[in-house]
Length: 129
Image (cartoon, rainbow, N blue to C red):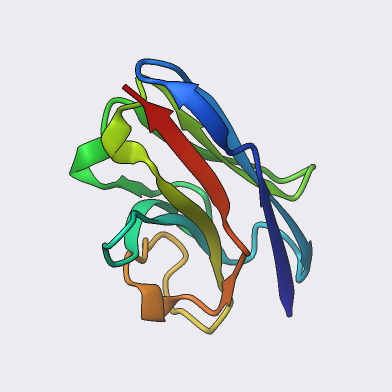
């Protein structure tokens, strides 16, 4: 079992930056794929950035490429999402997710909600114009 706790959300002006953190506990960090998703008001939850089990592969949705970076710190058992040049359309609740089910490949990234097994409670990011 894995527990996920997000932090770092808040209110920021357009063009500003935030760094989200996802502290993990339970299963050994670095042995499962992880991702950041977000749900904007009135919209479906969507993948934002994901990282493979071995940490060597990442995926970012087109809307955030060049602005967001996903990374992880094995020693701290923490996943990060660095968000720069924020836009009002980035306003959403951001969720951290972990995929612990068996996967044959360590380098694959997963972008669908139902591919993940554990979720955090979410952290609100609001970008003002």
